[in-house]
Each structure stands twice: as C-alpha cells, then as structure tokens.
Amino acid sequence: LTTQQVNLRLILVSGKTQDFIFSPNDSAMDIAKHVFDNWPLGWEEEQVSSASILRLIFQGRFLHGNVTLGALKLPPGRTTVMHLVARETLPEPNSHGQRNREKTAESNCCLLL
Image (cartoon, rainbow, N blue to C red):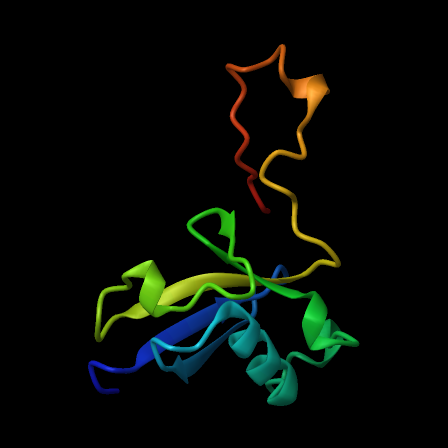
C-alpha cells in the first residue's frame, strides 16, 4: 500500500466486509464496477444484477458516481470504511420538496442499520 493508493473496506448491509485497493483517481462508479466484476467469495447471497445499482456511502452520505477518492481527502495509508448498498436511484439533494419544509428542524440524514 503506497501513499498513492487507498485501502477501502467495504461493508455490506449484512455486515460482511472486504478490503480493496484503489487509486485516488478512481470514482465511485469505477469502484462499483470493480467490485461487481470481482465480487468477493462469501458475498454470493448479496450478489447484484448490475454494477449500476451499487452505491457507496461515506460518512452517512451517498457518493455520486463521478466523485473520486482523491476528492474526499482521505487520510493516506489508512483504511477507509464505506458502506456498499444496492439501490436503483440516489436521493436527490432537494427531493424532500414541500412536505418537509414545515419540519426544518428535522435532520435530513439517514441512519442505515
């Protein structure tokens, strides 16, 4: 593991984990495709039909496909933990619309169990 490489530990909803090595230039979409193409042994029950529905969650937020690891300013040489989930679409930043406007005190963050 050089300083130019990022060690990612991906966690599935089931709690299974796997470590992967990526470069800072790799985007969330690149990572999803790599994981899909190199699906770990032991993850068979979680196998998905397409790389396009794999999403990364970092610090409680979904990463959009074009976000690179370098843009996240991850600490070099450390293992970074992200969640990997299967989800067709990402929530739009402003998709909460009218119904949540009255409840502005409410947090828009999600807790994944």
